[in-house]
Image (tube, rainbow, N blue to C red; front, top):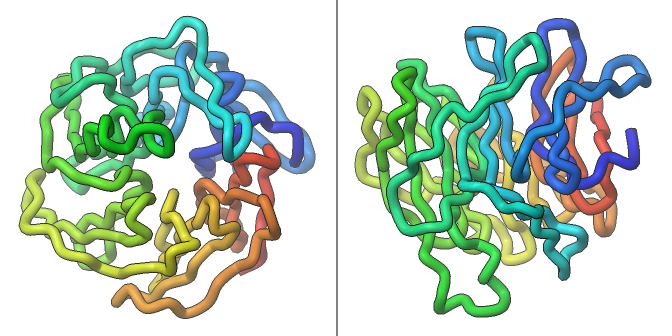
Length: 273
């Protein structure tokens, strides 16, 4: 499927369709059997998305920034406070949590549900200054929010924290885009333990979204134009070449296929597993 603006955050829905966000046009869409339907238009720029146990979609919204190309950013008018949004099954969306700790602006990027049912999400904060004034970058943070919508800080981070996933061993993995590596946090009942480096990629690979499927981690490489396939110990097993300028941003698994959003080309593609 092509012509999707800047897609991210693919999610397999219970009806077999693949939902995804479009940062550039602030839309949530779903694809199934050659047809695409629009689920909602939200404010800001929806960045990451997950399906909750309640059947609703939860969205990490960065406030209104979307790449037009690798060199140009689009800023929504108006920008909003970075937040977590909830898209209900009836198509109505609402702000779930928008009071975030840390320096502003907050720019929620990706999210995952913890074993306890909280939303854990990355906030790379003012990443729009990277490439122009790196000294002004605040660094990022790892946050959590429960059913009470109160957000708490789990850790401060550097280098643009991005995609995240729980390892089968229970630890939390977080991709650090600008540092070409994935960090591992022990997960201790809603808190994180001492962080360590889990794997390091080559300097042309910028970790973005990720998903486990069995004993393999599929990790999108955005500007690296590849999906890395890693084993449970963080060793590179194989890669999927998505083509020059493809900018793979995130992925999910459904019906024996890996579904990948390609940001700059505006495409949703799939690969047989």
